[in-house]
Structure formats: structure tokens, C-alpha cells
View (cartoon, rainbow, N blue to C red):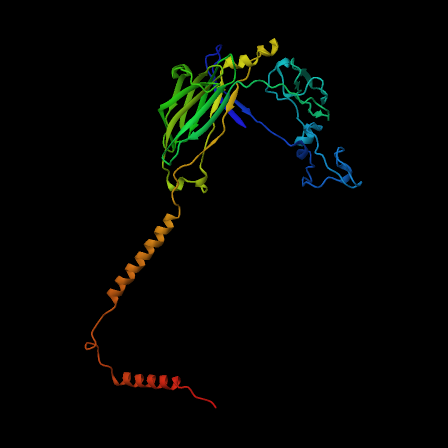
Length: 392
């Protein structure tokens, strides 16, 4: 899921607005989603429902090499999600020809069954179709089991992006971003945006850009022609992170490598998570293709689809793990134990010296008659108790 917030300033109005776009990508296992809701525990398939591989030899009637269900098995919205769509959103476009609530990528020769009241519009390329829903009528879509062509035309990607952390040591490091343009004729221009946590302190003056062609040869292009503009907002410790925004232009059939150095900050021991040795998450970089690339992707479409405003295209790199200097969290306990031992030894010795009185034998007071008699009685008991009587 992603939430994009961007300001929009229409030309025909005086003020600006904030546009929020939410995108949710979902991958479902149809077979698992179709399990009954009241008893979702997986159980072995009954023998009469098994699909056996007929290309295998069988020695008896009770053997079977089961074959998994094909990917084109039939499904319906209410069966996968547990409910249907109650109707169209009343906040969408008022014009009927602009309402596109549900779209599905099924060729025109494929069968799709929908409930009554939905208006179907097929795309000119013949690969998808959209349905406009009425506000008060529930909508359900059924895609029956049918064989589909495995060949799906794939568009050439506009840009390839890769982002990694380089360097070694616990004090400094580096960030490397590799941006490749696979097009042989057109250059690609985009906005490269990344936010770094406050404990990553980048050195913007070390930012370098290298251009290589597909053969790996360095192209002598100055960095000023690659990096059109730079916006940098430094971080504030424990308040906000670093914001770095670049406008880049990658020539055709070339690869641009961006490298800059950063310094790792020292955290307080209370700021480390329980799994401190795992590392700290660094948010992925966001790349927005400019409008020229959106128009280029729509050149192969019909004039009607090109006339409609194309949504902005975003790319996101993978998130990273940043290792930071991690203290020895057992050291406080070792210090406490050592300090307690030293204090106990010191206190015991000092208390012994202060309380105990050492005197000579001559200075000791003489014992009285009572003490002498008690001493004799104790000596006699010791002698009697220590005798061993031999029994024959």
C-alpha cells in the first residue's frame, strides 16, 4: 500500500489543493481464498476430487499422481473476498463516460459474467475491460474457468533502479543508486526522492554521477547535464530526517550511477530496539517519471485514451538495512557486579577495622572463678564424649 500526497495548483483557480492518492496492491491465492469461511483449516482432497496426471503409468486403480489446479480456474468476487461490491462510489466523476469503477485484464474473446446494471467498456487494445457501477445496485463479477493464451504483451520498462549501501566500518558508509535507461532512442527524465533517518548524515558535496553505456564504457558527460536540480533539507537530531530530491536525466541506452558518502551517528543505548544487531530500516527511494515519459508510454494507445490525463508513474526501490555501532548491552550488568563486589570488600574491611579491638594477651582481663569452673566442665565433657568403647 502506498499513499502519495502532492499539492496541485490548477491554472483556472487562485488557490492550491492537496491531492491524496492511495494505491493498494494485493496478491491472492485463489484456491486458498475459496476455502469455506466457517472451516478454513486445509484438509486432504477426497479421492473422487483428485485430478490425476494421465501421462503417468499406474499399476493399480488406487494410485494417483495429483496435478495442481491450473491458474485459470474460475472464481468470483463474492467467493474470493466473501462479499460483493455494494455499488459505485457517489464521489466519482459525474459524467457516465468517465466512470470506471472496476477494471479487469481479460481479452475481448474471454468470458466475464457480471450482474445486471453494470455498463461494460472494452479497451481499444483488446486486452482489458472496465465496468461502470450504479450507486444502488450490488455488483458481482464471475470469471469462469477457461483456457487463456499465455502470451501477454509486455511493455518495455522506462527505467531500471537499484539502490544499495556500500562501504565498510562502523563510522562511515556510502549510498549507491544505479539508474538504467533501456530505451535506445529516448532519454528519460524523472525526480529522484529519498528520505534518510536522522542518524544517517549525508555529505552532499561528495555526490558524484557517472554515466556508462550498455558496454560499460564511461561516457564523458558532465554531471551538470545529468543532475538538473537539487533540493536538500538537512536533518535535525531526533526530530526529522534528511530530504534529498534530484531532477535527473538519463541518456538513451545509458546507466547513471549516483554515489555519496554519509556518516553514522551514535545513538543512546535506550534508543536501540531489542534486535539491535539486525540493523535499522532505511526507507526506499521514490522515483516519479515526468509527464513526457507518461505521454511516451501512451503513444501506442488510441487517440481517446491518449486524450485522457495519464496518472503519474512511480517507481520504488527496495528498502535497506543500515548497521550501526552497537554497544555491549551486558556491560552495565558487568559494571554493577564489579562495583558491588569492590564496595562489599571495602566496606567489610573498613567496618572490621572500626569495630574490632585488638589487644595483647597481657592486657586482657583475668578470668574469674566462675569462668574457670565452666572451662573445666567443658573440658571434661569433651574428654568423655571423645572416648571410644570397644565391644567384644
